Amino acid sequence: MKATWFVTGTDTGDGKTAVSCALLCAAARAGLRTAAVKPVAAGCDDKGRNEDALALQACMTEVLDYEQVNPVALAEPIAPHIAADHAGKRLQANRLAGLCRGVMLGGAEFVLVEGAGGWRVPINPRETLADLARELGVGVILVVGMRLGCINHALLTAEAIRRDGLPLAAWVANQCGQRMACHEENLASLQQLLGAPLLGDVPFVPRWQGEDLASYLDIGKLLGR
Image (tube, rainbow, N blue to C red; front, side, top):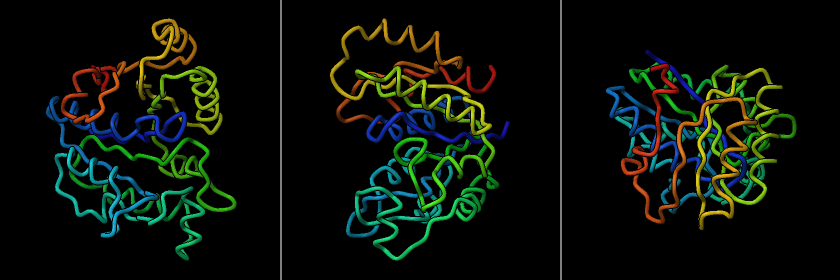
């Protein structure tokens, strides 16, 4: 098996990185060599490194340089296309896809490409991160932040993914904070309406570790096992 998935979310701050780290750890437990790419990250420390990208790097089995994991690191924690403009850089989907393929063609059997924010986050005046996923032609894993409004956000995102010609491979329910009212009822509605396998319901853990969160995921549904 050798496969890549694009990880997107229903919004910024919905736990894409926590879920991605958990997926990497779960895949490693299943005996797979893993890697991840955060092609664009906005918000870096004084060394030009992004917290999310570092977390991914720590959870993968393959040894990659930071620049391979996060090839475009933007200093300001703002919308990527604005941060890139401020930094005098131009983001292009085909260029980002080429950087991702460099990792995809390596030794890892299980590769994640984590987006920034949601599905339609712009990277330039004409393209969004959805165009990157389309360039890669991979299945999409949707992280749903479980809070009021999540059903609408999840269904709109799933509709956009499929309209863009990509399969919604699976989704993960992630609790971003205090457990929402009627959590189980909302989860059941999403299971009925999304039309894709649910890999797991991840609780809110303030100081999470990917290895701990992995136990909440059933990646057998993703791997066809």
